[in-house]
Amino acid sequence: MAREPIYAVIDIGTSKIVSIVARLGAEGELKPLGMGSVPSLGVQQGIIDDFSEVTDGVRSCLDECLRYMGRNPLGSVHAVVNGEHLVGTNSSEGLRNGAEPVTVTEQHLRSLISGAAGSLQEQADSASQQTLHIIPMRYRLDGVDGVRNPTGLHTNELQLEAHVVRGASIPLGNTVRALQSSKVPIEGLVSHPLASAEGVLTADEREMGVACIDIGAGTTKVAVYRGGTPYFSSVVAMGSNQLTRDLAVSLRVPYQMAEELKIEYGHAIPDDLDPNEDVVLPATQMQSRRTMQRKELCQPLYLRSIQMLKLIHEELCRAELTELPGGIVLTGGGAKMRGFGEMTSRGLRTQVRLGSPLWYAGLPESLRQPEYAAALGTLQWAVKHRHLTDRGRVKEDTGKGWSPASLFRRPFARSGAREETAE
Image (cartoon, rainbow, N blue to C red; front, side, top):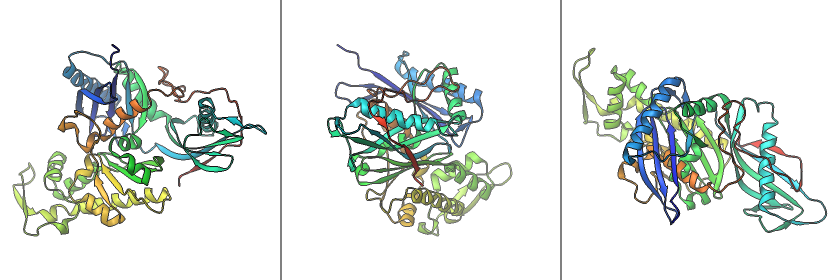
């Protein structure tokens, strides 16, 4: 009997490092085997700024994960990558055969993806950027738009519309080196916005048109889906840590106390609170125990939440979509703050829901939380893409050569490629 394959993921976040290992069952379901979570001490806004702290944290996280399992079955892992340097664009690539039509094959589709990768590498900034994902959105056959799967169809001209995610080589390389220094073999890197969307969006939402907003500790990730595929993705360098810092400054309390007060009493819309509700602030070295209105405590959270919502609105405007029938799905630990979902719904005038991992049979309640959306979504990503042959493992050489796309022989002659941003 064939052994069920094992998948592993690691997410090096601003506030914590998470690793999860799961086994793929006979029916395609993922069965969690172990997980680890430790504080992250060497990351700011998704970017590694202390190499030794991160490598120590990765080792501790994996040790905790493997203690659940009693052995080390890890062959390789998929890693979530984050940071404002991740940029999603929409690109077009074409192949032309001439007078006689041909039947489109998988090899033709790989040629299109290879062509898109080659065009990106030819750009002036190719030395400073790496391509993470080339995700087909739709195809055009002889001028007919909206073809989702052209395999087996006849055509003279085939064009691919794809969502391409690129990132800065240096921070991506630092993530690779940190994992390899911790003896972690890397199968692939997954963009955080798409990983979170994979974890919480339903098929119907993706088809209708939906935005997934992941509010993490250091960054806010935006992924917009349309017609079942990613259409826009970006990362904003602001997260829930900023709300905690604002609260700490306003109340003149230590950061950790402010975090605890935010979790227990925080609310994004103070006017919705009872004006007679009071909060007791514990004594600190600088101040004695005191009492204040909860509405007053939440005022700095309201002001920063408004700023964060404006940034989200700006990113959604860049997607240039007039409407999102599927609404907005909020996820990530920062999305759990009371009132933020209602503020988003009122401010952006659309339906909003809090997104937790949806599809994991046997998942313990402790993992059914928005803060694990990206890690669990990456497991799903790994399973979905396990049969792709146009991607390669991240190479041990962490310098130039770990682009995920391989070049294939092109049976068509490439037509002029063009690239346009989603802005």
